[in-house]
Image (tube, rainbow, N blue to C red):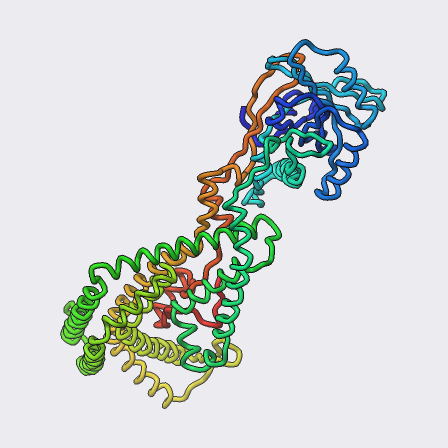
Length: 593
């Protein structure tokens, strides 16, 4: 039987209001006889058993232990009943003694669970001494893995709008059970080797889990974090100095994606080196995800750096860069020569075509001269740039994106010239079109109003409209070609930044945790029927349903920065049609998601 809600199991009997749910830790099934301590949840008519206290014990010491435990854990822990594990015949004296303990600890109802020898079926009953109503209660005995429940984090449904009220109620009920076990962590720190007067059985009874390596790392992390915090404060203070606020340093710092990525990683280092303790599971997972992301990023960067400096690949890359730049310049020159003729058989305005073609050819000539002037220094520049890979793969990718932007700067200039000229003509034609209709644009009220024009204004407007209209195809063709080239460069840079965002935002620690210890990320529970017999309590095994990988990524995905404005397709097409510039960086006035 599978299910996410215990209420479904209860309702199947038709007497849901009389069902008592007892959550029993599976690690205590072989414990010796004693009393059961745990939390009674009256709203759900449920008992969450946390441990078994063995004989001999003094009731006063047990009460003192429970009061101290309540003060520390803030959980209302009490004695809920008795546990009888008789491996021989049922002992009448022991059963009567365990039943009499209900008068000492006085809990209503007093739960009695008995395991007789090697029998599969357990007997479970309740005593209601204060109530005159001795009706028979149906009992469901639910086994749970105490360690997994304590270490797991129950996640609410992601789509809260689509979840029903019943699902929300079931999630809150499960949360009460998980919180009870998780908050009782102090109880599980005691084991059978302690010299105290109370002997307990729980999931850590045979010895508290510990690791010398983990403890040493915890001790070493404190001075390391203090040193890292001090160094980061110095770096952050240098980044906020007045020198970086002057132009052009402020311009470069805000436009280069490398600077943006370094600032983003600096924030990550400040988060993980902070001595402030995580307040909840979300903050703890965020710190762990950032730490693992930084480690993997730096490891991949070091691998890239070792590959680049092996077999003189930097020199081969520098020798290849100049011929590639010359090849791109030659292809652009051939493209411009084609545009200056009769491209695709189109009849262009020859005078404007020659002016624009020679203007762009001159820019290509300047660019080739600049590349050849820098050619003796390119290998040295690439050698020092390759060292930056030790800061992480994402930093190296951002440097690659900036290099692509610098090497294609002439294409960006061509696009800006063509877009400005095309935009000027589009807005001129739209303004003159309003003149023919007796309209004008009201700048103050941001609307189109009626207006009367005289004959001279209409004549000049008609003349300008005709000139702009016949020159528009030539300008539009240059704008179209250079816009396609610009979009090709933007797509390449966009793919690089998608890879950077993937490394920055992917919650690697959560994914590894989901792969290795799936119970740590719980989406809910399911119940499997172990044994069912008339006259015996229904025995169920509670198993944890882990989050799906998609939900893990959606829940713990790290926030990233974005160098590109996130325009919709409609807005992008509108900008392309009107000739507005598509910038490779964000603007201060644009809102980012």
